Image (cartoon, rainbow, N blue to C red; front, side, top):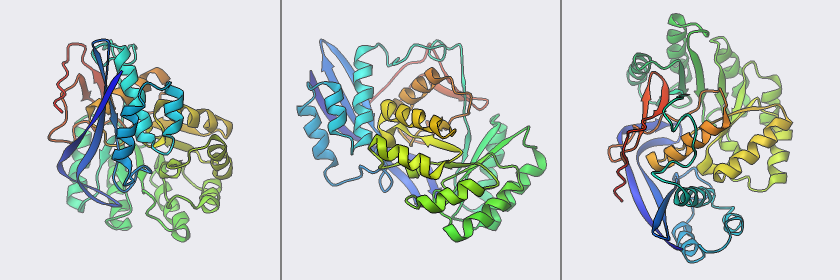
Length: 343
């Protein structure tokens, strides 16, 4: 088998705000395999400043992988445990090599017979911009909105949520919020109580990762469900993952395959979450349509009714053409759609 990789810079249509700053572009790395006249492609979805494998030796390790590509998958997968996005790219490329037209999993989703509910994302920005996004997402037919909080002023963010809730009940519209660890442990409970008055479905990562005892206290006494997100990043060993979940005992966990070791790593977290009665859902991590396609197809095999976070395919000016599309708050697959991957 032959292997090589290529870096590709995705450019946002408009600057996208998070509690960690403004995103204008995103680098992804594409692993391409060739064997017996067939090719397979996988996306190593690195996210600068957040991925645990955002390291100076990232490209050299990718190069090393191409030289070792004939090793058994489980050996390679284990060798790159500290590079979860490379694990996922390898997993994806090998799966793509075995199949046709980037259909990695045959389900009713890829047959065009089933769609998957997703949340509409509200990016941080000034109040006017955030309100405009809410209006647009509702017009697009979303029944689940996820709003980033923690950067533009909590009172203003609560005011936006109140305005939404005054028009739409919890039965009509599910609201999720994502703090990206922006709250301090001292202030978090007060803010959780304020948010709970608005029938919020859940809050992702209210305080910064690594504060297991503080997060455990929040999860035990919280007035609204807490979902761990960044907390899962960089926890490689199964025993450590179990310890984290049994210590914190969250209500939910959020699974981003590029951050936790692809399908295999995500499914390990799912199995462990059942031990503590935690729910889960899947979210993309700003991958291109190559990675998003793999995640959406895999998520369809899991039969989880929870709306996922797979609505990021339309963020870029130079994304690849693919059969995925979004309509009425759902992601769907066009069986007559075409692929155009220009690397």
